Length: 166
Image (tube, rainbow, N blue to C red):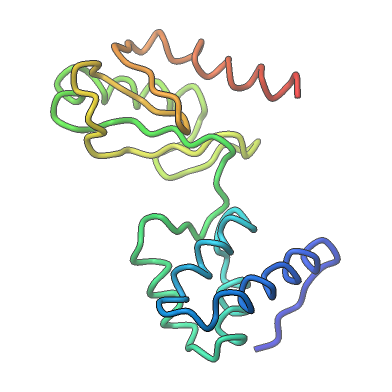
């Protein structure tokens, strides 16, 4: 397969070569290489999967099968901040669907989509174990509980404001 790279990608693919060289001799190396590749690129587009396939002499169907099976891998660009809306029973009963709808409306994205500015990716998650704070969302490592839909614009604004000052 002929993989064409633009100038910006060349440096990342050089780093990918180092990742492949470092881990290719380890048992279970494919998962580790895919994890490190996703850290490097932010996601695993077909171009990266094809490159790994070629370098490791593993069929791309095998690599894509692993990428599509495990939820920790993404084939689409992800936002800087991942918003996880808990849809577990306690959160759902206390209004997490309304919270999810408020976020969708505020960001103009649906579940598993990323905002146009690449700032936010929205996920609906299973129980995160914070039932006493229901309904709960996470934004990366930050946890917000006892929410109402009216809380959402202010929470999102904190992250938007932070990006504008950086």
